[in-house]
Image (cartoon, rainbow, N blue to C red; front, side, top):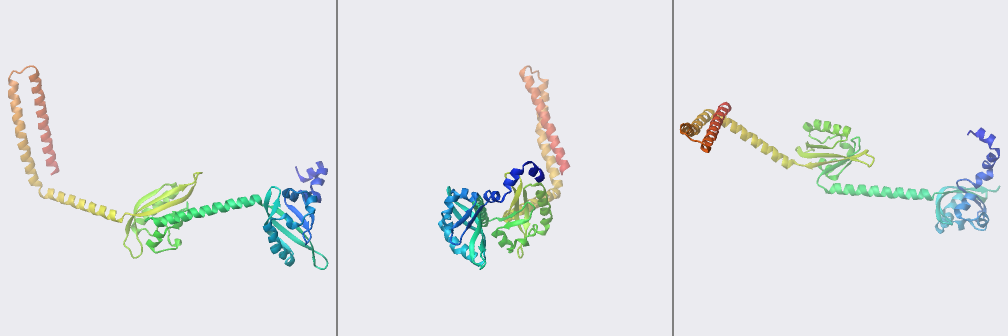
Length: 355
C-alpha cells in the first residue's frame, strides 16, 4: 500500500501514528528531559517500560537515581562537564537500573539554554544496547579465542624441526615459521615469492605442480631442493594440504618442508654404486663372452651325457616285456627325461643368444 492509499483509507490511523505525541511515546528509543539538578521533567513510554516504572513514579525521582552507582558517578564526572563545556554529549555508554536488572545504553544529550546562556534543562535519548553488548562480548570472546589459537599454532610450528608455512586459497603466503625464516635469513614474508627459495633446476616443475594443486584443491607431495644464500642446495620433502571448512570451502593451505638431505644423498650414492656394479658386470660378461660360451657348451655336454644314458637304458627296458604298473612307470620316466633334455637344450640356446 502506498502512502497516498494509506492516508485515504486509514485517515484516523495515519493521524494517530504520525502525531508528535505518538512518535515521542512509542519511539524505539527512550526520551527523557530533566533539570540541571536532576529533576525529571518528562519521560516517554519506551523508557518507562525499560525502567519498569510508571511515568508518575519517575517524576518523583532524580535522574541520577535511575542509573547504577557506576553510571551515576560517570555522569557526574564526565557527562556533566561535557554538557557545561560543549553543550552536548554523544554516544556515552553507561547503565540504567531496570525492573529486570541493569541494562546498558548509549546516552546522547543536548543542553537547553536561557537568554543569558545558562543551562536550564537537558534533553536526552537513551538507546538500549543490552543485546548489542552481548553480541559484542561474544564477538570479542571469539576474537580472543581465534587469536589464542593462532598463537598456539605459531608456537607449535616454531618448536617442530620442519619449515612450516600457510597460504590463502589463492596461494599467497600469510604465515612462515621461525625455522623457515632462519633457514633463508629473510624475516619479511613479502620476500618469499612463489617458491623463490627452490633450487632453479627444480623450480619449474614445483611451480607447475603447485598451480595444478591450487586449481584442483589437491594435496602436493614432492622431493625438491631448497637453495639459501651461502648454502649448497639441500633436499627436502615438500608437503601441502588443503584445509576445508564445514561448508566444504577451501580456506587455507598448510605446507611444510622436511629435510631428507642425508637420506637422499645415501639413496643417490647407493644408486650410483648399483649402476657402477651393473656396468662392471656387463663389461665382465662382454670381455669374457667367448670363455662363458665354452663353459656353457661344456657344462651342457656334461649334463646331457647322463640324460642320454638314461634315455638309452629306457630304450633297453622297453625291449623287455614289462607289464602292468611297471610299464606305466617306465612311460612316465621316459616322458620326464625327454622334458629334461628339452629344457637343457633351451637353456643352452638362450645362453648362446645372451652371450
